[in-house]
Amino acid sequence: MPQQLVEGLRRFRRESFPRFREHYQRLVAEGQRPSTLFLGCADSRVVPDLLTSALPGDLFVVRNVGNLVPPFGPDTGFDGTLAGIEFATIVLAVKDIVVCGHSHCGAIRALFTPLGADAPHLARWLELALPAAVDSEMTEANLRRTEMRSIVLQLERLMTFPIVRERVERGETCLHGWYYVIEEGQVLGLDTASGEFQPLS
Ligand SMILES: [Zn+2]
Image 1 (spheres, protein in one colour):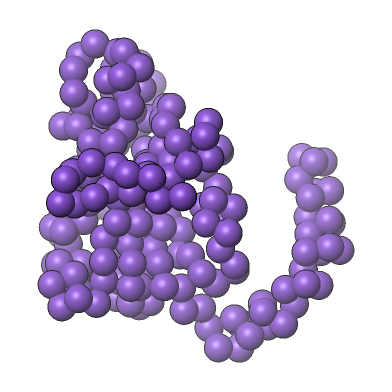
Image 2 (tube, helix red, strand yellow; image 1 turned 135 degrees about the horizontal axis):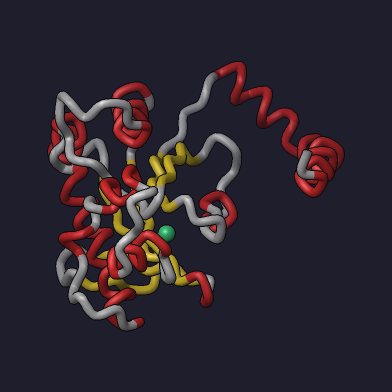
């Protein structure tokens, strides 16, 4: 048993839960109604609720390696990301979808350093970011640019989902591209007009 985590559970129950008791009880009685699907990287340094100062019930979070979006299709097998996108849009009818990438992403770095044959699922999964790779040379600048370009690519792929496209075209859902600069605590947002990322925070 990871003792540090168990101590964290006890501290949550003792200190944090009492402050939010009524909030949690209301969320249980009325059900969750998060306004936003946050599609982020599984990286341990990306903590969506902390980053956005969100309360329980605010964000429906789907995280995977590299904040990647598979293409919509009838025959993609078992996929938690596709299921999460459908749940958020069809069941929860979220108003916003944020695809949040970040600096120093291991998934993006792995595009430049081919994985061994013992990680076939990871290698296949990372193909979803491959068209964003700017160059074969792994420089810090190329990594940063690829991280940002991948966010744009995933947003484009989200629009291949009929339900997402319909909701966006009806003005019911907005898509957003975010880039979290971990070392600066800063989030940049994609400006769709210029294609550039500008500070949001
Ligand atoms: Zn990452």
